[in-house]
Length: 367
Image 1 (cartoon, one colour):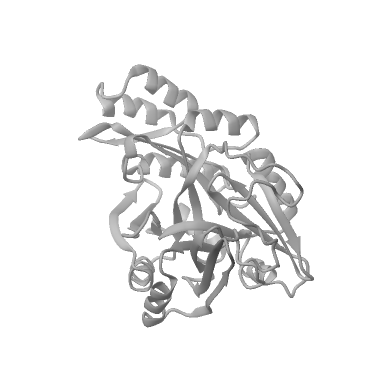
Image 2: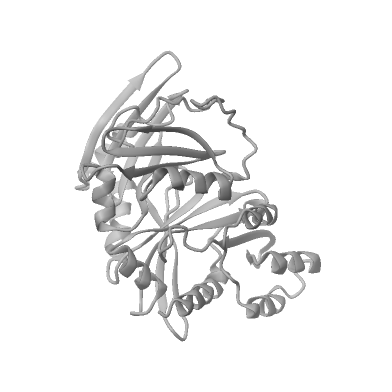
């Protein structure tokens, strides 16, 4: 199971598309509208986002935005056997929003279905064989009726060449925030319904607030979904829940092969990032005890990157940083992550530094 694509509901799909193009370097590959919804598709390498906005109150995107600010409505998973996945989900009591459908031609076969996730999040389940449409060509997945675009197509409908020099190598993980007391039920739901397994568990506490996190991974493929719950009323997780008006996807981690080069590019294009506390780099010098080259330490500090590693594998570095919220409210943001030498984990050594960095942003907002 892999994360195939992510579907956002936004106030203005066209403006959101332009932001992804101008500030994140994505390419606009297709767009369409029906009588109630506008849908745009942006892509960068293997990372694909669907952006839907309402044109009338009849739009499903309107119903989502009536309950939440702009954010993730659906995380789609790609699987090898959709029938077995849906049968397991149904057996665990999941609500099937759409049964398995398929489309087949001489190039390949696409199967898809949809289940209700936690809260208002849904999960489209996709099975691809051969060369398939990028999206199911029906109204039920992207709210509108998107173009029938083949996976691997080189040209968009406007005739613009789609290049393959993306700095992004995939979606590393998606993080869900849930209310206090819901962590265990949510984790159990993903275990029983989709077959995820528990990995690391973290409890972070600072002078101001705290969170509890359980990382889930799927044993078949690379899908990873950490789940967070707040452990204090002024936690950044609680702030998300308050502003989002319920649980939801807090951030998506985009994997890259060169985070320093990517950050230089995105900052030039105007993407704002969190400010890492200066004390982090002072502490880093004590942590690495000569394990990291001095030149790398200087580069990391210049680029404002968090770095983590395991003592038994000091060369397998995990480098990460985080954007500011992208929709104007303190809800959804992106993580950029580079895993050198297949580094594992989620930056456990950085959790406290990250928490303090986001807390500083909360203080600026008067939280």
